[in-house]
Length: 171
Image 1 (cartoon, rainbow, N blue to C red):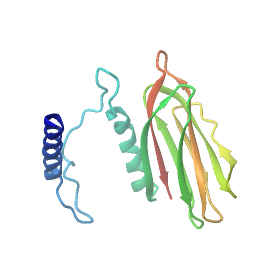
Image 2 (cartoon, rainbow, N blue to C red):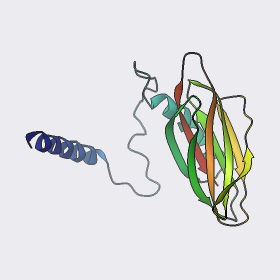
Image 3 (cartoon, rainbow, N blue to C red):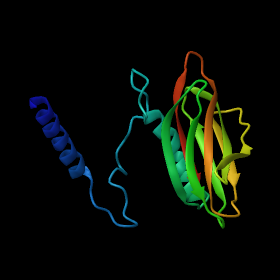
Image 4 (cartoon, rainbow, N blue to C red):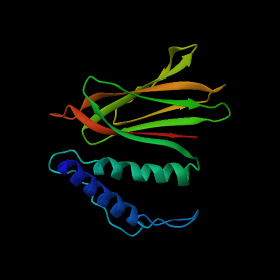
């Protein structure tokens, strides 16, 4: 009972502290972190998401500022050798979607397969054939359907069996 109470107090304090750091913002207002410096190097255990964040932030800026499109999903996760990851999303007609995946420094080659849900069956639609740590798929749905995106790390840098990846979906 004491342990549960202690844990509850600690979590409550952490939540209150974290929430106190968030400042309300309005549209067009600059981020409070605009002038902060971040270290995008990995930690000694190789488990930090910071290297992946450092790789993705310029991509977000390019997609939004140069391509002038809207990002509708960003997802970060771990991926392991010989294991695929899946993400699902309904895509809507009238939009041209880009699906971009990027692997961290441990991933040498990453690819995607795109499936569409047709009458409760997943049917293969398209795939990438990237020879690097980034891959891009484009899709223009003709009607609202659910899609599955399979992410596969086809090759890792030597001595690695896992790494982080990010997937960005935009229209």
